[in-house]
Length: 65
Image 1 (cartoon, helix red, strand yellow):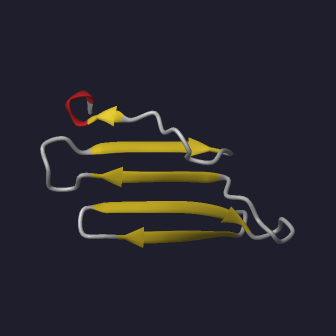
Image 2 (image 1 turned 90 degrees about the horizontal axis):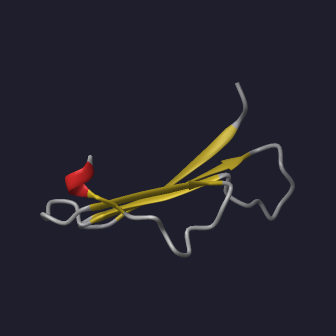
């Protein structure tokens, strides 16, 4: 099992997360990033990307889950 660090940022209606490998040199880049927006609302959205920054997320409409 690889050592990794998971960071969470929880707001009132969103959660953002990133996973960092501990064995990579500093400054570390996240190997996985994602977010859940609109928690509790009808139009909630989920997005996650591996090995990339979440600059233009591929939103998944809540109706397709």
